[in-house]
Image (cartoon, rainbow, N blue to C red; front, side):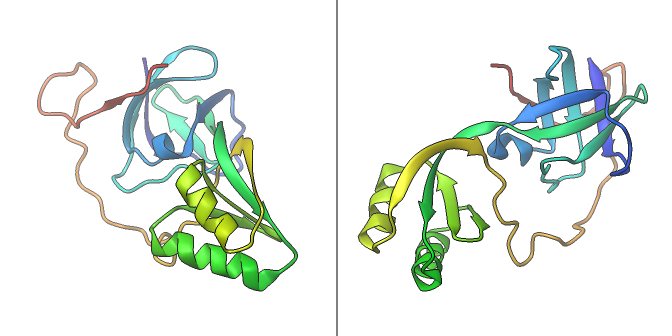
Length: 166
């Protein structure tokens, strides 16, 4: 299993890919597999959210690029910016993660929320696409860090790791 504990420079050339849906890209401790099938363990700073295109540095020196996996989403499209703003407001009021682009709002597939947005007058369709929601007003802060507290041989008190095998 390759171990990843830090991000790499954005200009680094990746030799591997890590394809994950958004909810899994929010986990700092994760056991999963690279696109190649090789087992991988992430031990990143708590609060780290991996974004499409982020580069990670493995303990063996390899660079791994994060790829946003296609997900089941709902998409509203309109040239009416007020209508899009209303949809974003009501979804945000329910703490729903949304991705925004010119004339487009996307959120995780949920038929109740889809009906709510349609009720506002915004047509909504189901799509499958990578999901890269807005980070929020406070999403860019650096957070804080703690010592990792684990060793390569698995001895001692280590961090909890989530299993993400499909």
